[in-house]
Length: 85
Ligand SMILES: [Zn+2]
Image (tube, rainbow, N blue to C red):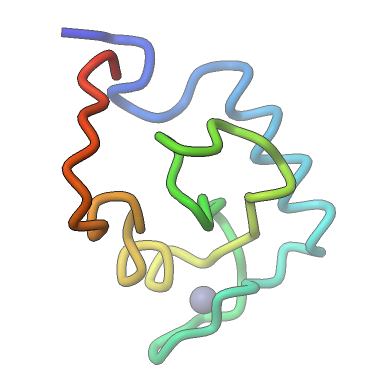
């Protein structure tokens, strides 16, 4: 089992997340139904498996939106294996 990403919060990730939240003014950029507008999380718009933690593909997101939208790479039906993660 890999332990580094299992909880999604390494020191580096926390720093990136704080920067993205500050960039977007702690305001949710996703705004789906049930949005609280107060971003506390960061959403990977293309999926972390595809873009990694590139800030250009990260947006501030509230928890309900981030849960709802999930990881787009998981919905992608293409059978690309990424077992190294
Ligand atoms: Zn939201």
